Length: 218
Length: 256
Ligand SMILES: Nc1ncnc2c1ncn2[C@@H]1O[C@H](COP(=O)(O)OP(=O)(O)OP(=O)(O)O)[C@@H](O)[C@H]1O
Ligand SMILES: [Mg+2]
Image (cartoon, rainbow over all chains, first blue to last red; front, side):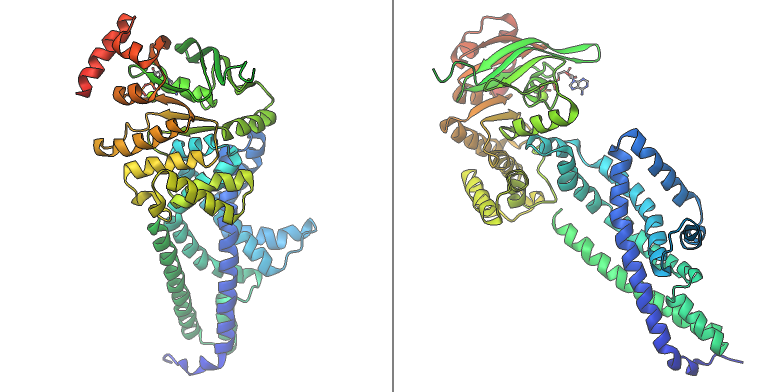
């Protein structure tokens, strides 16, 4: 029994819907991981000791355990304490926080690397430390780590397949649904792979545009 | 009787870094509109003294007053922050290495602080940027990023950025030391212009000619002390202290 792609067109609606969900979850989780990464970095570097500790535990939890387990915890575990998140939201929260921790590591290093003269110049003008961080230090730090953060976001796209296990009908789960009916795993997994690849290309194009824009101000 | 109190007053300033005493009981006053040069060998404490005036390098002991208001007040953290930010709005500072914000254009460098702290509108901010940049001769670079400016242009932008807060006092820490020789003059000209407009300025410099031609008073510092001070014609031509003479012999020699 060879490959037979003739069954694919009939399932294209399902697959494309899966693509839409994958993009939606990736973009939402990427946004969360970006903003969360900045907040976590600022907390790790500047918050009082007592505030930092719970966040350190949180970071350790998200870096030291499998993402799959984190998704299970958020989706199935939180229900037990009365937090019943829809699968999509649980997926975004899990992926977003997981990558926020990784982004935060990058951003912390970049914040430390920003010349101290920048903070001094901002403070000298009368800005508070928070204002100086927000307007001067953090934007420069983030700008410096856009390429590695971009790599994290591409990893995020690939890891978004994991949310299929909590029932979000994104691309991987859509392919599995088609396979369940047609018994054509090779064809549909290949189609899914091509779709991931195309989304990936799209993301890289967006990242390159952002990097080019940043390069203009260097 | 409007000026009973000095404009800037430093009282018994001391500063330690660990066991090392960097400033040793310095007291001085600066009158409104005065232009004071601080000269002295490397490591004598010039920058530390200048940076103590806006509490960037806090003193270990002593007081700094601007128009009778203590700058380096001891207050609970939050109150201190509020107080010092207000004081710093009145004290402009220019650094040796410019410290322009590289992610902002020249215009944004100039308007960022006034927009944030004074809540001016976009139109007002644009007018302010144009006014300040015209003042330092940089209007044609208004939408450039700092990376595309020459050193002299960067420093003029930094001066415009400080002036945009309408400070009462300007502090310069070797504003021209990092510049190629041919770019020094354009920055000196801007500072001379400020002098003509009666801006009060305290200028740390290695340029004796500039200090002599622009400043009303010269302070010679060595090893954390103000060794000698007076009008430039006295300090440069007729110094009383041996250390001053020795320093000037080296530096006036170097200058030619
Ligand atoms: N953060 C610091 N920690 C420890 N010592 C310091 C610090 N900053 C300055 N010093 C010391 O304080 C002394 C005075 O330094 P300062 O920078 O005020 O000198 P300066 O007169 O400005 O010298 P230069 O002409 O080289 O700029 C020096 O001996 C310097 O090593
Ligand atoms: Mg110095």
